[in-house]
Image (cartoon, rainbow, N blue to C red):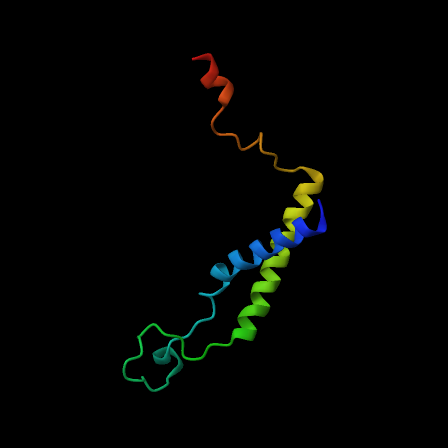
Amino acid sequence: MRWTSALAIYVLFWAFSVFLVLPFGVRTTREAGGDHVPGQSESAPHEFSAGRVAWRVTIVATALFVLFQLNYHYGWVTPQMVDFFDTRDMVRR
C-alpha cells in the first residue's frame, strides 16, 4: 500500500473515531455541580477540552489503524470471508 493511501485511510479512521470518543467523559453542568446558564441545554457539557478529545481520538484511531494494517498485511479477514451475497448462487438461478 502506498503511503498516501495509508495516510488517507488513517484520516478516515481519525474522523470516525471522533464519533466514538466524543460521548465518553462528558459531564453536564448539573453533574459537575455548577450553575446552569439560562438558554443552555441541560445536556451541554460543563467543560469541553478539545485537546483532551483530540488526544483520545488519536490514540483510538492509531490503534484501529494498526489493526487495519496488520489485517492488510496478514490477511486475517478477506472480502471472500464476508461475502454474504454469494453471486455464484444468483447466476445459477
